[in-house]
Length: 137
Image 1: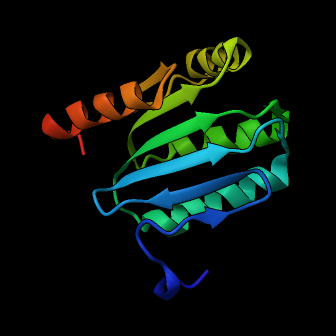
Image 2 (image 1 turned 90 degrees about the vertical axis):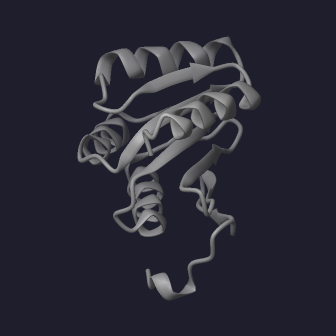
Image 3 (image 1 turned 30 degrees about the horizontal axis):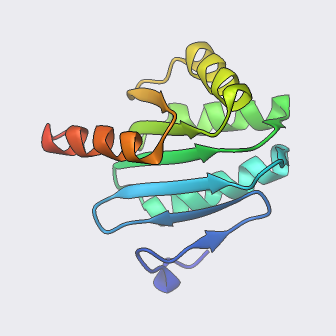
């Protein structure tokens, strides 16, 4: 992808989610309801994030609505996330099942950056703002 077409705040769509980066380096990703992410989806989603981020440290806010991911997709996400680039990640869950999946994933992967699961977007944004005030990103 050619970065010359990038616009802060513009929403970019893949088969499984919509993503955008704000001027204050918060990257949003909202998965679509009920999708299952496979390896090709994971590659496309992470390539889009990396293209938008362009080696900047960002804080991510992920809204988690999907039904799940394949093992290959999870491994790809873990591998890319382990390289860094995210100062922190807030995961907003939409129901008890997605909360369970998110908590399990965070506990299993144990990322280097702080990760926290939230039941509301407002709470996630407050946490991210607190991180910004403390100079985390």
